[in-house]
Image (cartoon, rainbow, N blue to C red):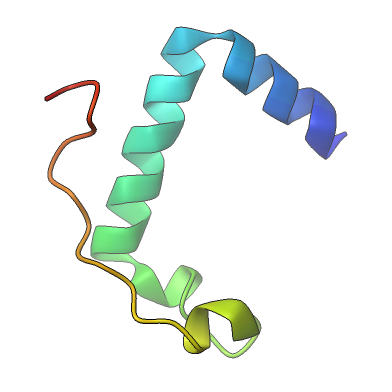
Length: 58
C-alpha cells in the first residue's frame, strides 16, 4: 500500500508539491513528530534548517 501511495505521489506533480510543503511545515512547526524516541536515525544526525521554499519554487 505504501508503494502505491508513493508511486501515485511521484507520478503527480501537484501531489508531489503538496507533499513537499506538508513535510516542510511538519519539520518547522511540529518537529517532535519526526524527532522522537521512535526514530533512532534522526536522533543520531544533525539536521539542517528547514528551507523556506523548495528548489523548484525558488
